[in-house]
Amino acid sequence: MAGRVAGGATVAFRPSGSSMVPLIRSRQQVVVAPVDPSKLEVGDIVLARVAGTVY
Image (cartoon, rainbow, N blue to C red; front, side, top):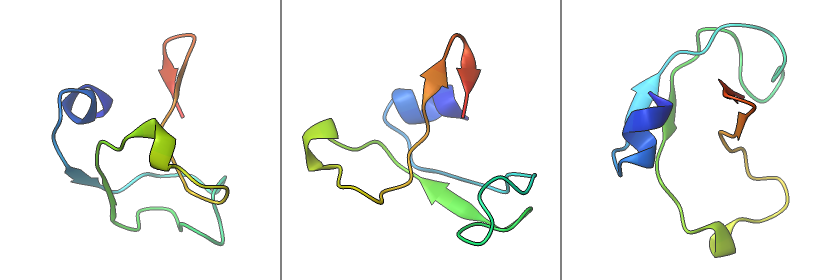
């Protein structure tokens, strides 16, 4: 999924886990899309690859 976004695609998926509650609940559908990093603002939720793991 992260690779598809890195390739320019917009992707819908249902992440599992509770680390983002209450903003995102486990198995709630989210949509991720490529974005120009200069347009990010404090409070935006992003995918990030750290040491090979996507968070």
